[in-house]
Image (tube, rainbow, N blue to C red; front, top):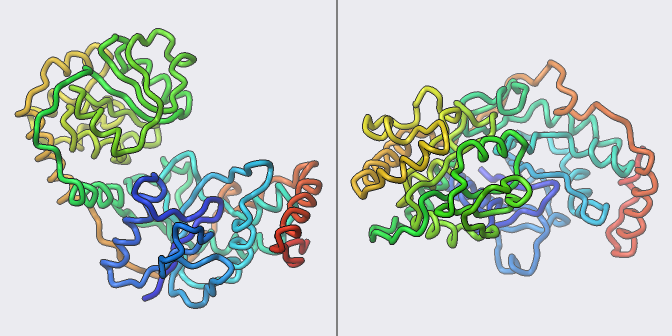
Length: 390
């Protein structure tokens, strides 16, 4: 079976050092282990020149594929314009009639009709809205949690549970075995991540100790959101630089969005359990304590306040780290990491405007922005008159 992986709004990245690239790299590996021939379709930049299985988006024939997988991303228009491959991919994929899968990985990045997005913002590709609506309705949505309705605020008729987060981290650990040499501890507690919704900020305020012995890493706007924090603050660092910082901490704080609670084992769960820090799991994240089975750890790792997080730091021991690692092994063994192809026998029939894209009219400035997009693409020699079909 020959399959393609693509991304509409952002380019397909094949690189373990990039968060989106990490997902692509290991999902490609998972599909290949299932017996598939996998190609990546995107803007083939210089770094992929010698990668045979990376196909430039203008050279693709979608009819060559038995199945297409779509990685979701934000519809961000830098400089007011979409990435040019977004236009062409939306146009050419609209005529694809084969099986379609979409990754659901972030509650802030919901599946949406890209043709309607481009029509609404630039008044192009209106003729592709209905074909993409059909794609959205017949797609199978791959989800790594247990309750997709809680995650999306809507339950697609066709979805599959697949623990690709567990698969990614287990393979990362095979490539980079755990550090078995105990590292000196510089911090009591570490929290890392990006700026999220207000709920996440409130959770961090509640659970993160403000002490000088703590560390916060990432795009968190600490001075604005956590003005009382007296510890060290570092900017976002790559994963291979982050994990030594976690190992130098006694406790790693595990906090999720409301959509993750009692639903999704995030990458943070696996990172914390595989590190030399104890995983301090907010009680809302796993209220029924289903993730941790070890009786000693169940009494220790679940926290309900900043003071209990600091108290956990006082319990740090190598014996508890070994117990954590055994829990991680168990989670890997219990996870569903086997992908099985299927063709849905029915489409979504009930309404969900944000999903299908039949909501909202073009903005007043959209025609002007569309004209600018046309001019820029004409200058680059990549404009096609068929984009402007209304």
